[in-house]
Image (cartoon, rainbow over all chains, first blue to last red; front, side):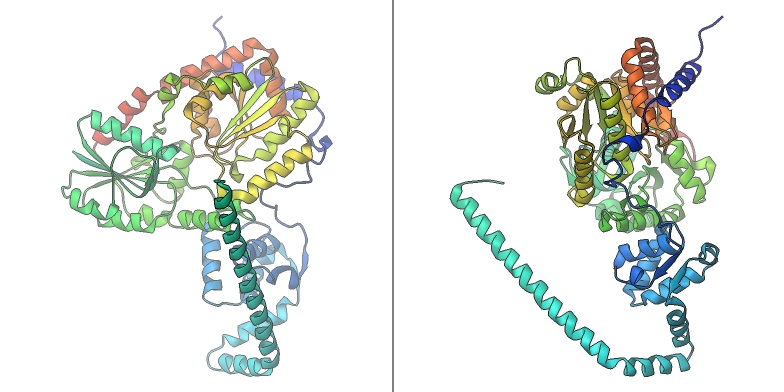
Length: 186
Length: 361
């Protein structure tokens, strides 16, 4: 009889190792093994969110979170780019979340986002020709005081951020001068 | 024939760079005039030309450009569209952006842009596509590339040079000896799934040999700092810091020494377009334990153990078996050497490349 093929040898070995591995303690017995997640987070298992869970992150992080929460999967490349483009064009996060939730896939998942439906309905109303623009303007006028408050808050944050950046630059310069004086190279 | 090898970035010490350089050498040896074109190049001894000059050099319809695609590069695609010569695309694969979520927005965006631009590349209507693996070929088929224009060609590499390189004696001294040595080779990136590797190794330390060590060889990318930090935190959490050695950007001599001291190469990666370290291990008689993901099982063939499950116990038990079962180890390493000779040896790749380029489209 001829020798078994390399594939047969490998498969027989793999079967034996599989049986041996079953005798080993499971990985969840390791200390703190699950404590530090190295990979990207899995899609969130929850079926109910508030808007605050979703709208306070930006850019790629917002797109990823929206997809993982509403569709239970990460965005594919094309969807990611298309959604980032919408954000860059100034599209609202409510519109993006609403579109995802209203898509066939979103309906299948059936995730509830408290407060999304009325705001999405309003956004859709603002898209009506002529009348939509008027509705949007009226609501914006009504919201002017809070918009102004938000603008002042952002101005303050921007100032603090500039100040911190200047302090950091000064510290870096000081450190570089110190290194030079001590003859230390990086 | 004039042949231009075109890529957005060329580096002397990565898989794409090695493929380009060895391909260029093979084509020159065959009597062709070859030039390298790239936007950026690092560490290359030979001249690299600016892509803007490519249309002036390749004027004849019989000239050839081979475009190496591994990231998105709209300018390169636009350039290919304008060229009137023969066009071939070498597809190295683009890592799906999902792996980089929560780790690097720059990588997410670059990988997403690269993947989203593939349909434009397909529209260039190249006469031939050379994916590095059947796994890569499936990407292209899904995008509508006709099967008749697809020919799998494994990547060219520097394994012969690695074989000829004397091993770094310091590394041999430091990591040689009787202790079991796990080796993992590949840049520190989230698609490599170092978490499974670390868990498997921690189990091995606890159940099999308490003095084992794990060498993780691979470039540390500053933009993936968050991933590296999480890895270090996990190493700390598992309490295996004294046994795990992260070796960043090491020399060829040091890499050779790592292979020589290794009991097994363990690669639980979740996405690979080919995985050159597997071929290195085969050539250097190191048994391989890998995940059945991406092109890994295909690259390995019958020359190693592959697991499609995530269970770290399978990786740990595999190394334990290979440590104590000399016959199993010998069978796998013999199969590895044979596979390297028949599938990945330079003369095999050169012959195949030349035959493919001579065959009419």
